[in-house]
Amino acid sequence: MAAKKVLMLHGYAQNAHIFSKRMGALRKACGKDIELVFVDGPHVLSPADLAEAFQTSSQSSSLDDLGASEAGAETDPALAPRGWWHVDATRTKTPGLEDSILLIRDYLIKDHYEGIFGFSQGAGMATIIAALLERPEVFPPFLVDGKPPHPPLTFCISAAGFRPYSLLCDTILLPSFSTPTLHILGKNDVIVVEERSKSILDISDNKRVEYHDGGHFVPSKANWRNFLKAYIKDPLGNVPSPTPGPESQPASGTVTPATPAQ
Image 1 (cartoon, rainbow, N blue to C red):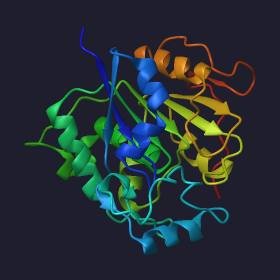
Image 2 (cartoon, one colour; image 1 turned 120 degrees about the horizontal axis):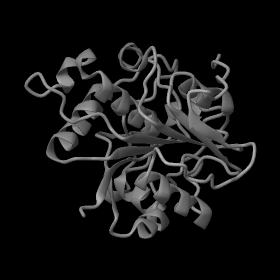
Image 3 (cartoon, rainbow, N blue to C red; image 1 turned 180 degrees about the vertical axis):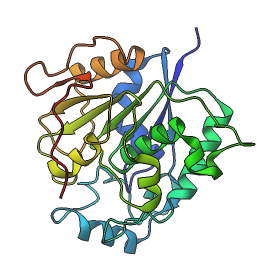
Image 4 (cartoon, one colour; image 1 turned 135 degrees about the vertical axis):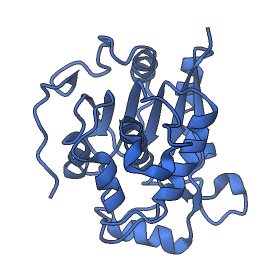
């Protein structure tokens, strides 16, 4: 049986190489059953881009806070900080998003993917792609000869995700999207704070929410690795929570609606 393929989208200021290294424990746990395909965002970020991002986060932050301590001024292209769109100070625009959508479209044309897994800005990108595959006609350049480039995905995993805001994002994401989506949130995340993370939960119709005690990262302890592998294999199944208790929420339409972000 062929391995299930999952598109992996890195966070802002990371890149495919950095994210792959960060997800090394999960890659090893998945073995030959699941192939994680790491993709570079098309936009190499300048110092001015990073300064803009640091100004708009909830508090003073750094590349380390973004999970991209390896990125910086080094000349090694494998360490160049990248993004799926440029951060706008008002958070009402997503400059460069169209390029990223077309880049992912080209991956989807060439192969079959069971799902998509994104971290931080990559999680926002993942939900955009999942929603767009439900209604590809809302962004005609995504179509190939008038047809969708790929069937709707079986699942989406959004780690430290949030709802991006722009006219294009609203067109794709609103009023809601229904791809089964696992939302992983850190209770001590100071980059994507609780009210910001809830903005994507509000429009995710078929959601499962799992919390971890850490900050802005994808949890990688054994319980989480085993959970994520099991979820990817059977996203609609009754996979036990990695953190049993009241902090997890079931995969159903009965989850208590989150308070809209201000």
